[in-house]
Amino acid sequence: MFNSGAIWVRRAFSLAMTLNEIFLIREKLLADLDQIKGTDELEAFKLAHLTRKGTIAAMFDDLRAVPKEEKPQAGKELNQLRQLVEERFTEKESTFAARRMSDHSMAAPGGVIDLTMPARTVPVNAPGHEHPLMKTLNEMIAIFERMGFAVEYGPEIEDDEHNFGKLNFPADHPARDMQDTFFVKPSAEWPKGAAAGPRHAPLLLRTHTSPVQIRLMERQKPPIRAIMPGRVYRNEAASARAGVAFFMMEGLVVDMGVSMADLKGILLSFARQFFGNDAKIRLRPSFFPFTEPSAEVDVSCFICGGQGCRVCKNSGWLEILGAGMVHPNVLTASGIDPQVYSGYAFGIGIDRTAMMRYGVSDIRDFFEGDYRFLEQF
Ligand code: DAH
Image (cartoon, rainbow, N blue to C red; front, side, top):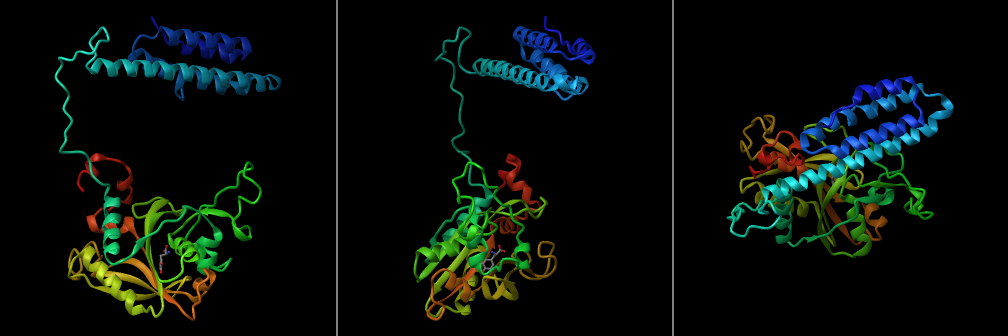
């Protein structure tokens, strides 16, 4: 019968840890593991040996008392011991799991499948559904596609030039601080120069979808009319309102004679299709380096219709996106002549919009994979 030997092991070890002792303990643990016949014993083994308070952890603690000269070798042996025991433990665990599966399946005790057993039914009317974030995003995409926008994508690992430089963020401009950035640590194995974009700017996880505007303008001449959805990353403390990764959707229109009136028209049309026919929008002056003039765009609260309620914090308005006329420097940086062409752009946060739309108060609910939450959409 298996017996957890944590006590004697600990005593033996506190005297002096020698390689011989490590060897003996390894043999004992492996032999014990070998004897285990069921999941209860396996669980007891785990508790006795593999947890924070178990034998192996105690052996690592005791390493401190080992004479300095012996430490490297003893540490190495101990690591190997841990690895071996954990490997064998996992093997054992999966054997039991496999056995449990076949016990529950149609296999008869002899391992032969009993074809006369009734089939287990799969509910065909509940095959799952879109995640609420993708549902929100896909609806937005469909609305813009109907209005003649193409859908474009760009890389999530960007260079500084596309994420900031060509979007008219000067090198040390405080506007960069609005988007606390994850930089990609160059690997020693990368080919020379690969760690840096043009001008040796570092690589980073894009903080917004605006760099896709630049990539699009670099490869396509006007007229341009596109939306660019995707995941973006910011180094923010996780909270009910923010996470380190979220979705945004960029919009860009560049052509001759494009004006702010066109921007307003498109956004109002979008708001009506997405939030309902009564939706109104308002533009408030704002600042983004890549647009001039820039605006924050609010939509009338679709819950209270503008009267004021909990969702809109009694203002009657919900902030949904940032927008503006593409800055001439941005057009020039992308090889488009601002004397000939003009454009508008906008960027909308998908997660926040989905939260508003569905009355979700904590953004983390979207990512926990809890069916009780997901099934409601
Ligand atoms: N990139 C901005 C952000 O992440 C959003 C944005 C604002 C995009 C204005 C735009 C724009 O294209 O014109 O906060």
